[in-house]
Length: 544
Image (tube, rainbow, N blue to C red):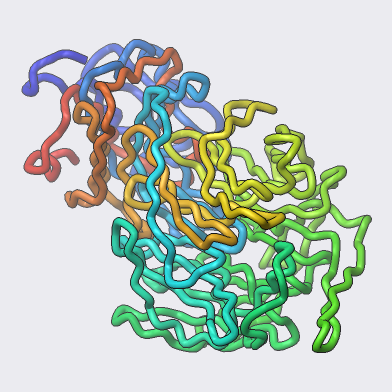
């Protein structure tokens, strides 16, 4: 990839009825799966369609490059949007990924929704930064990217303290958004169509082997944050429950569910809530994928006795499946397969076109290629009990744990590598790496009981924390030495620089179009170009 700027258009794939390179006899694409074309470009089905550029193995080493394209997405799809392009070896962690990131089911939150990311790495060492403690937080129950910023939902355990939502202001600073909550916890967060939603309720510290202390108000509500920074009450969809824990996005609409009892609720356009069909168990996490809303089950229904003891008992559901999925067309739940020896499924993530869920009490991750049936992908460590939040970051899958509050990286089936700790509180039974989100080029992680947020950086990651909307977008990904830049419709939307020696991205995997570390691409693509230099801002508008 060494040519002058005037002649360094290495490849142009118009994607108009074919996958050939229009500027040379090399680098032609080979269609795989059910790739089709319409009058606008290539249509990727989000299941198996992709292009493979077989003779690209030796490219992208230390050279600068730019990829640009026009992409069309439907933000209301019940899918992950997935990867635009990727050339990444997960064994050496070398190469790049260019993705539209969706992180639903990060415990109780939709942490990233339709966020464009471009990243590259060459096996660099993770670096952690302490981002402080929002207020008097004991639990960071959710982290969510919204309108270019990061928000944290918290639980506080003081007698007069309440759940709050904070905006990250950089370094170790957090700004209180003044959520008018009466209960002790803001649980789930979700950002959709420019609106941030928060679910509130009562978190019982005994669920983490902590004393029953603090504010016992059981108020359960959903709130929305307007453009002027004011919260509005969206009502209580589940008056019978002491919490509304999960918030999820499915087919472009907001759904909520409690953690202590059964129930699934949908917010309608008129502001009212519809109660959907109850699942058999209760659900600890919700994630949309391939047309369905998946629920991670808990095999025990929780009951709380009267004050002052408020004794907790459980009704066991030993015959329940590990995961269920909901179809809004039929208003029905379908069992998706047993997960042996695991009682609680806590989280979801989509990685390399497959669905993963994390479990208790053996701290394992299970994988499903179709959403039905599960394969054991390994235990993190014999002393760990539970997998909590999971995210994809710079081509790799990461997950947090209980009781150590460690963060692990997935390095292949049954291979999990500890990359750091986010809570070393002494004298407690359980510490949790509860929540995660990708923002500003870093992976943020929130904990219990310290209530701190840490951020991890690996390689160079340019990320945009705005939702990519329905329609056509001109996008570009730029590698400039160790700096990653991301452009959307001519505007610089993300940039970061890795503080390491110049990275060598060489790997011997083909360039994949429409597939990568996250998921198969769902949408349309046209005018994909590869340049052998780092395009500058004044050149961006002329790309497509």
